[in-house]
Length: 420
Image 1 (cartoon, one colour):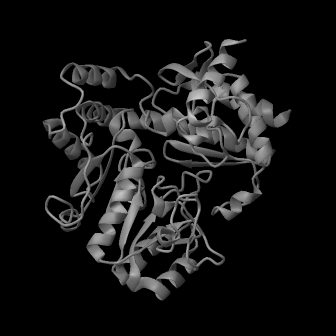
Image 2 (cartoon, rainbow, N blue to C red):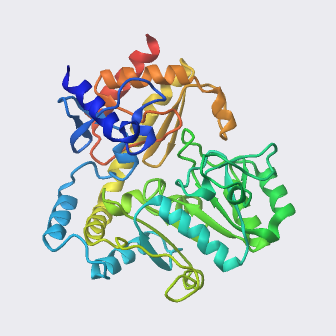
C-alpha cells in the first residue's frame, strides 16, 4: 500500500469526506486531493515530496507568498508571548488602524475569526440597524455558510429564496432574495417591489466564486443607488477582494463606498482572522454599545493580529510586485485566446481562466464553460508541478513571490495543454 493511498484512506476514515472543507476533496476535477506538507514563497510541497507552483495560496491570504520572513518573525514573537488572552491587546488597535488606513469607509472595526463570521455578523447588524428582515444577495456570490446565504433563487428572479442546503430552514430562506449578478434591471425591479422591507444588499464587488467575473459598468453604482433610495445598507463582501483587487479593495478601485465592509484572508497573514467595519453610527449598534449582539473568545487573537500587521506593513511595498506578476501572466495567457476558446479575467492580483469563448457576466453564463475540459486541465497542471484551484468556479491568486520562472513554466504548460 502506497503512502498516499494509506493517508487518503486514513483521512476518509476519521474526517468527513477526508477533508475539513468540501472543495479540498477535488470532487469537481476527479482524483485524490494533494496533501500539503509545507510551503515556501510561491510553492507548496506535498507529503510525498512533489513541488508545485501555488496559485491557490490558501484561497487568497498568502499575497506575500508562503512563510514570508517578516510574517514568520511576527508570529514567532507573538507565540512566545502567549497564544490567546481572551482580553483586548494593543495589537488589535494597531491592526485596526492599519486596516482603516487602507479602507477609510471602515470608521470603526470589529475583528472576528472567519469570512463567514464577518458576513453573518454584518447582515445581523444591518437587520438590527434598519429594523427590517430581508437580505438581498446575488446568484453565485459566496458569503460563507451561514443559513441566510445558503439560498438558491426561486422559480423567478424576484421570487422568495429556497434553501440550498439541508438544515437551512425555509423560514430563513424566505427572508433572502437572490438575483443575477450584473443584472441592473432585476436589481431595480426588486427594490421597487420590496425596498421598504430590505435591510441590506450584500455583494462581492468582483465575483470570485463563479470564475472571477468583473462588475459591468454601472452595476456597483446601481447597487449604491437602490440602497440609498430605499434606506437599505450596502454591504461589500471584500473577504476575497480586499487588498487584492487593489490595496484598498474593490471599493477603492471602483470608487463606490459601502455602508459595511467584510474583510478576511489577507488581514490575518495566514492565520484565522476576519473583520467587518463601517460608519461609526452603524457600528455603534453593536454590543457593548448597542443592542446587536456578537462576540467571540478568539476574536482579536494576538498571534493573528501581529501576523496580520506584519502582512499589511509589507504589502505597502510588495503589492506592486504581485500585481506586476499577475498582469504579466494574464497578458501572456490572453494571447492564447486568439487561437483557443478560453477567457482570462484579471482583478488586481486575482485571475480566472475559463474554458469558453462566450461572454460571462453571471452564474447562468458559467453554463457555457467546459467543465470536463477544466478537470483535464487541472490534472495536467498538477502532473506538471502547478497547483491551480480545483474548480472552474474558483479564482486563482498570485503573490509577490511569483517570479518569471513561475510564469514561464505556467504559460508553457497551459499552451501545451491547449494545443494537445
